[in-house]
Image (cartoon, rainbow, N blue to C red; front, side, top):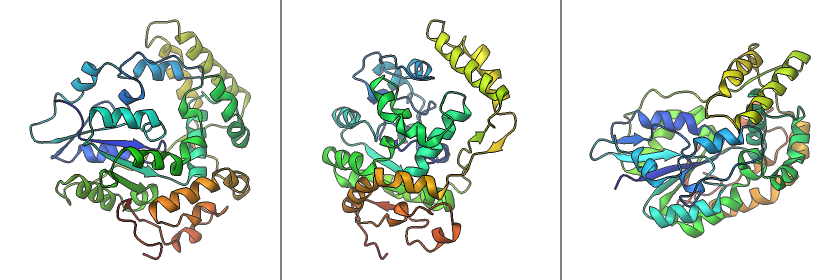
Length: 333
């Protein structure tokens, strides 16, 4: 049956695209040609249109028919393990049950990133694409509940996507621990070949095969200017009109407008210690839950200067570490 043997289930903006591409280079693995098919987000029914900018396009791209989903793996060579990557699966508890119901033996891989830094990267990504109307990161986070009530897609839930304790707790209530691999984003960023080998060991395929791996996607930023604000409004308007046009026609406007918006190729605005300090209380309880589930310390995520002061990262015991939740190594390791 052409269904996947393993899934990269999240989190968004945690290096999953680079990991997907790296695993696709392994001769014993086959990764779906479409990343983010999102099949398990619905019960084989057409997904419901969302209300946020860009949500209509995302819905149109979802592979929701089982026959279409299975077709993604038709080209897999005999004997290879098949996989796909949909970063919203970790956040979606119904998806956990759907995966268990259809492919109960599947192995699941989650990549976790500092939840505040992840939220900031998520916001930067949507801002750079011209879709995020709020220019202030903290204000955008404060709008999360209101946007959820309006039906905006889960990708807009900047802090909720990073509540890994809540999501992992549910995932481990559905799947045995030995079918779940939990990695740290830093591990791929700082030692990508070791991370790939960790995944290969988990999947039961040869290690030391993938020696050249891609770097993570780097989101560029655009300045605050009248021209760029106009471009952002044009992109959102084109996206809104795209709801009523044949698929792809909106790109006639959005693609060149996005290219102009990103013309400066600026690096993303830095996340400050002050911003972290204001948001950490909103994720602290969940981080403590994650620690209890994994037996690991994530105290560095509670440090306002984490990611701000590089020296502080280098003395952290989790720097460049990957782990399986079943192994539960002590914080001192």
